[in-house]
Length: 158
Image 1 (cartoon, one colour):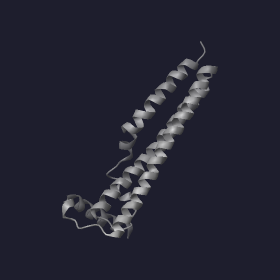
Image 2 (cartoon, helix red, strand yellow):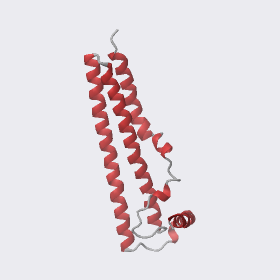
Image 3 (cartoon, rainbow, N blue to C red):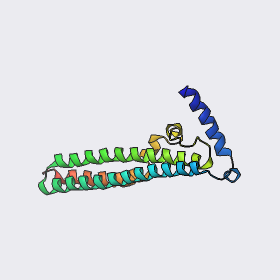
Image 4 (cartoon, rainbow, N blue to C red):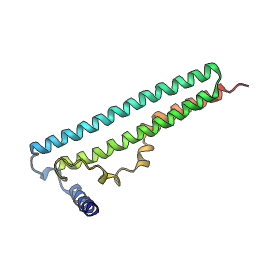
């Protein structure tokens, strides 16, 4: 039952993208409420992503600073591990946010059932590799990891 519904939903979703937005009728109150629900989820995921970036920056820089001041390379390694952890966590939030944005677009066009929150149908439109390589992840955590590598080099006693 689930597989049949997904293939039917995927076909209707693909047809929906071909439909002109101007041809659709006005949104009902239920459809507007559905869009509000999806917007609330997107906002929570965005907040969680920002929080992960803040904590990742704080933890990593604290570890790098302590490692450089005390010349303890192990602490810099812990900072690099925390950067990797927070990058994976942030990419998860970003991936989920993008899936819900796809859901929002189809809900706005009236292509899905009202109050449907099934974001998993859109996984083929937003692969996880694409999210991990995005500027939001690489552009933030890449330089942070580079600072950690320099801190690790600095912390080694000669």
